Image (cartoon, rainbow, N blue to C red; front, side, top):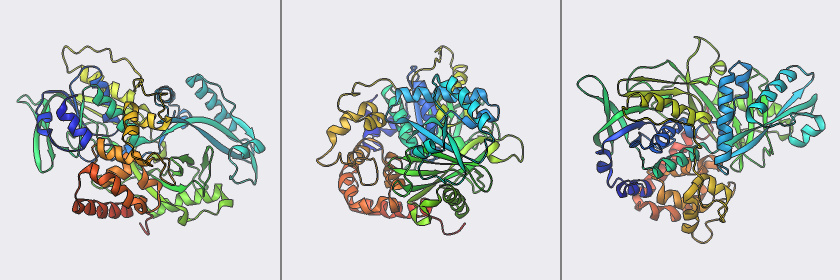
Length: 522
């Protein structure tokens, strides 16, 4: 990695940006979510000169607003998508093996009331799930055993329940870890640098893109451009399959108000859709809705009042004894899934989650898919890139996403090791007295704020509190009660003067209220 780019990433500054962008690139990736990050890593580790640009912040869109699950897609079996499920299970198992502390097993419990309708087919699907994962679990619990696994569920008519295992993650930290791994292989990644238009040679072939950032335009040349903008795919080139943007919205509650050892899956009492609640980062996450998003993609997505009510009805039906209300909601968030449209007029929850990749001269584009399968998506994209790079003959074999790092088992906590990889030991070394303590109500250490401000290209306060850390989702009012201490830690690291900090503070509070607080009306 060059000294110029090291300054870009580690200090969050723009020094040396023009020199970085002036290089000759093999691959220019547009889009800084998990799909783009995956393409960047798989290209760089195979010797390609690869650059990624993101018009907002890394993981700003769908990849910081997902349901935080790395799952095999059990429900896809019901719809006959065996190949997608098998691929998802394989990718889940790979991530569990190579990213402990970042991708962790998550037990699920699904209560059964009344008769055994649907139980047999559900258990058969789980048996196939076990075969795919190479493990065997006990999946049926009688009522007494099930209440030990999920003690707060509704008891009336409980026959027992089904339990199984998937996985959870911090989606934004997963993107950042993948990007960090790509940088270690010589790649470059720049946030707040958007693609204005594609550049074309005299024969019409794409040969780069005109990028815009900080009021300056940069003409960047690349042998192949990869559009990995997800739900925003299409405007640059106007080709590819039709996308159906679907909004998924979530609630975050304090763990003490909805205490769970396992995730609890339930069928919504109004429409029978699956809804879940599970422990995440010291809080409890509840989701998700699945609605057509018709508000456009130019601004951040937010939950609607109707979606809040929908999720609260599900919680109140499944956990009646807890008497949960809106007052228990700490934060909300919503994201748009880049789903490839199926039959016209089909229900959103029935749309598939397969991905697609296509190409034209000098261009490869990807869309669809899910968080879990980002490596498979990246490899499919690179197979099309390979067809346009004569002389590049990599076998594109599937490799573990993260290489083993030497700090494992050397006094580095599992959580920090998973999130920061080879940087975890340096993060610990940078911590000041008291900064390894957890921030109350979260599993985040104060030292993570210092490290992010110093080394992770933070450009705005919401980068720090919504994506580098998740304090804006985990703490009431976006964690503003802690802003004095956050300022003392981070302002010197960021190099912001008082006027800049106060501007960022005001902008963050306004953004949080609009996009992560409870809406009063639709």
